[in-house]
Length: 190
Image (cartoon, helix red, strand yellow):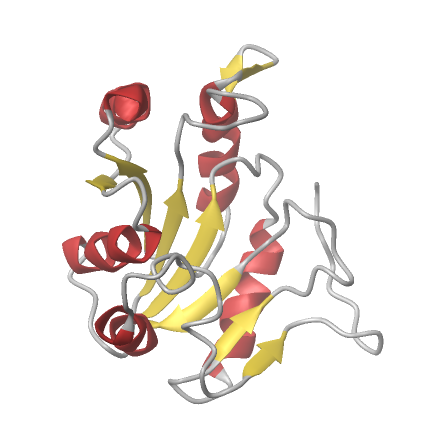
């Protein structure tokens, strides 16, 4: 069972176009994100999932220059992009898929690992995530099996709701929250 982390990243943003490659202290935001994911002890492969749009070519160029695996897919069909990025990594039904977003330069490696550990304690069909009721936005981690991603992909229709990679199609059999008021997870160096 491998752990495949897929980060969705696009240059398009209504509020701050190009933010995933915006420089922070001289380095692109995505570089910070990738570096923090590399600190996870459980991630086997990390893929940047971007689009085939010409506006996202700078992300492809960045990934190629830095030997970062990437996948280009449909801009408007995030579920399709995630599914095919996982297939590119030769994911099997038992493999664990992590969903992250590229505009989170402070993603916490210990939270990624904790979400994976919690997910492994459940069954293959569960959906696990870091609860934003206890952690700020930017620490979002979603974990599910390739089997769940495949089922969501196969059962999706063309509506806006199901053609995203939001939790709705993935949490059909319940949801596990990794955090609660009775449990403390060390954030490590943030």
